[in-house]
Length: 578
Image 1 (tube, one colour):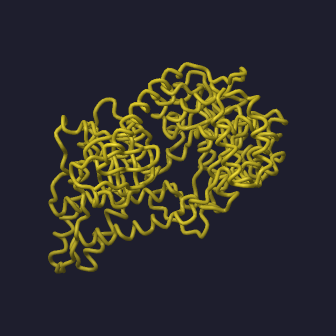
Image 2 (tube, rainbow, N blue to C red):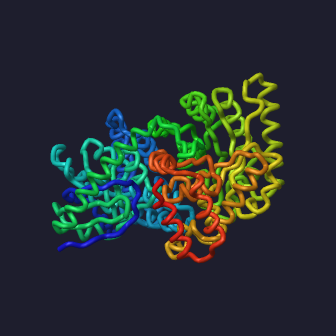
Image 3 (cartoon, rainbow, N blue to C red):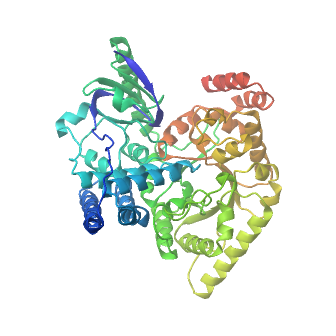
């Protein structure tokens, strides 16, 4: 029987192959009484399971093949840190001692409690870290029960296989690196899950959040994975199969053509140069930036250096990370965003913060100003790195002039300290601000005299403008980049910055969406920053675009409040043959 499953596309492409079910069923855990004299031995059994899993992860880290994405080692290190955290390592032992329950039951109760806490978080990255907690806990449960290792096909058999799993951990991904699966599909996960991140880094089409794929698909069934539409077709008929084979061939040819654009400068048909920059999370992402042909880094999200660890990165660790990126870019711009963390994004894995509206709470620049020592340490590290490249500093989520003035005071303090210590830095480090809050967009002159450049973060700007939590499934469908209020705010911000002579970029998801490229060009945008994988497609649109042809359609869009008409104008705009 042929049927289709719908999920979230996280890595583009089309894969056709036979299903291989990764046996990873949830372990059934029963409770039994452990007598007082038996409890020390039961605690020791739990500790031995922790030790066994730690050794397994260390061995997997040693087995990481050359050329594997740097994220693999990072994720395995994260799982080892989780094993050591008292939430997982100490609390079950206390439960064994005080309640007289067996180790499996104590661990399962603590896992369930932690999962509930993580599921209440609104930030998508932090919420999906519940998967890491469960993956580590499940490995310990398997060690306690003696469950065997996952089933894998022979290397030569994996070439035409599509891996189907309820979930995949970084440790699993290390094993699969040696097995050339065509695609990964999972029941759970999201765009920021580790499975998704690794799939993108491996260039493998992936669909997650399919909910019941593992239960509904049988071993060896023919699958089509559409990584663009987020669809998995099971047992397709001959007509659909032929259509998707053609699409797969066209996709491969298009990818090859786009690679040829790597060294081509992004210039419109009427000769206007456009700057295409890349977004990164870690220093290891620089290789992808170079391969994409990006002209620099428009957004270095530094919070990823702070997350999933038991201690804060010090000045030296941050300095070396920023310097590594600056030197690797060899004179191209590197825009380092200061820490965008807080509220439901605690700097410590165990720091569960309860607040009714995390997105409106103590986050980003507000958090940094509330923790001046953490902020000052980062500012010093960025200043020091500015000696080794074309570094810029970007401040997230500005909403008031006082926030900017307080930040500039800390920058001056850091400069004075470094000067006194004879540590070199760029005295004229450019400082920019992110426009993510409607108040900042509407009152832009408050900031312009103190900032050197601006960057629009469309993800948060849309969320705050429409009062929609895009991570909430109940309202996520209302998240609309084409809402008239959003378009007017973006166009207004671009016009205001350009009149003031301030460089301005967009670094949110809209910048990497090729269907939005001509619209943004028509608004006057000349600098885009995006995930490196999206850059070739955006560049291709730019090379086929004449700015003169955009003026009238864009004016009509800004004067239209009818959603259907907006969609219609945008469609025609993207269908123009230049």
